[in-house]
Length: 128
Figure 1: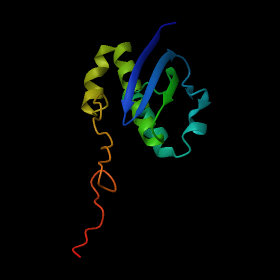
Figure 2: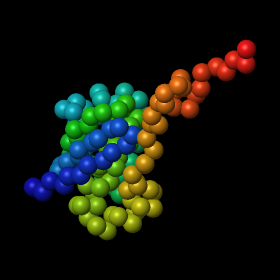
Figure 3: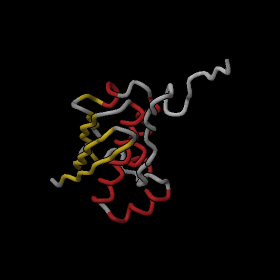
Figure 4: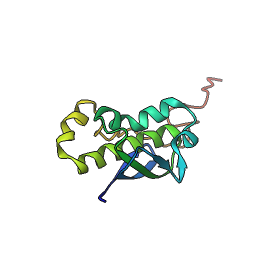
C-alpha cells in the first residue's frame, strides 16, 4: 500500500496531505470533512483536484492542517491534494495545470504599519 504525501499552503495555513488507495474517506485533523467544513463550498473547493482527475472514490485522504481560517485551510488542502496526485501519476500534471490547481496563491495579509489604523487605512486627517 503506497502512500503519496505532499504539503499545501495558502495564506497562513499549512496542510500536510496523505493519499492512500481506498474508498474515498476524507479525514481532516481526525474529523470527517462534513464535520470540519460546515459550508459545502469549502468541501467542493478542497476536493476539486480529485474531482477534476476523476479520482474521487479511489483514495482515502488524511490531512493535518493548521493556521489561518477555513478558507485558507481549504485552499491549502486543495494544493496538497493536487501535489500528491502528481506524485501518484505524473500524467495528471497537465490536467491539474489546466485548472490552475498546482499554482501556489502568493497573496498574504499585508502587515499593519505604525502611525496607521491598518495596513493601508490612515487615521482621520484633521486640518484644524
